Image 1 (spheres, rainbow, N blue to C red):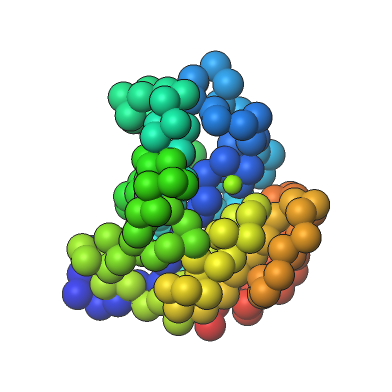
Image 2: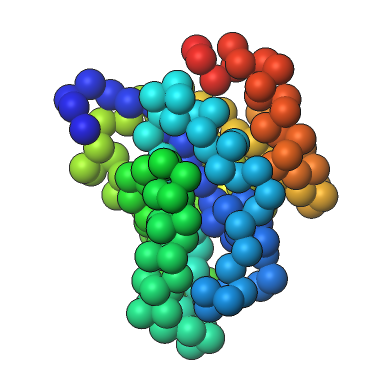
Length: 180
Ligand SMILES: [Mg+2]
Ligand SMILES: [Zn+2]
């Protein structure tokens, strides 16, 4: 990346990229959400750099290992690359909530990590997630705009949709929103 600062799209993983069956850790359980590639492309076409920021407390809870997570991440990245989508980095928090770490969303450690090696224009960046902690992360870190997906009642999001498909359609019809 150049020294120029880039707009970024921060993606939650479970419930956004893949269907959230709860603590997904195996390739055979990883199912890409319908239209997720088209959704991400709307942003990459506009020059956004894409990051994944994901709480993976299943590691800290002992449900699966960091190696399992990394194997699954490699599979996920292959899926994106096959669609000509480059994911710049995948940041994850491996800790259980009791660890009270600085990286578990809604704490901002993962965004700080991204900022330490990338020039990012946070004000013009977007965060998309399916939990309150995703939207709160954006608020806490100063990410300008947010999308909440799903049926949960989530406060403070810029935009909310029941699913990625509806969100993609809205952004296609309102392109200016992500062009500014
Ligand atoms: Mg999620
Ligand atoms: Zn953590």
